[in-house]
Length: 294
Image (spheres, rainbow, N blue to C red):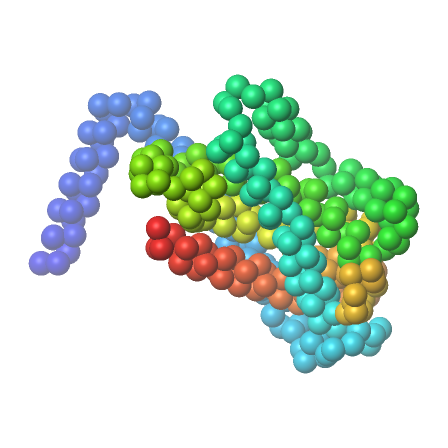
């Protein structure tokens, strides 16, 4: 009986698909293409994650999580701590500036303002520059001209310049998505411009802003070339921002390029994957919490 019902349902679905294909062939073909691309993307994602897990999980060992790095244990703990330091320091430098610039462009500047047009053109140009160019700029300016040497601070400033366009554009779009009724209601109750922005508009735009921050964190954690030129590759936990250090991505690159510890490089890739996933999940939970308070 169940098989008959199942066959009837499959027949109904087949007739529905045939009817849609006959009624609008172009729409049917486009839906097939979109679904195919989506499935391919999901399949590639599963393959990459599966490959990393299969290669890396068997090579995870307690020696990789020792506090100090040496040529025997090639511990990733200094790189993990440095990654957290680098992420926090870069976000502290860029997030306030990016959100402030977005607030100016959306809430205070006129729509046909020439300065706003120049800022948008500049940010779009900066977003398309390869990371190695940022690394060379950081090497010449922060490391050499300012004499910061290879340091966490030089790397953080370089990363801040890299992700500034992303923070600005995402914050700008999030602020634009806030309905004008919210602003008009606040003005009608007697609130000023600044209070309206910080108590009504900005909290309502927080989920979109956090989405941009999550993307920025992903780029910070995964960046390698720019940090090799600015932060260096010293495998130690920095005591202050003026010391050199390596992040997880740089650590993984160093191990794989040496050719002596490829198993440890795969294990580092697993830890990096877990770190990115944990950061994204926590950021999404924070964004959801802020979004629920609107």
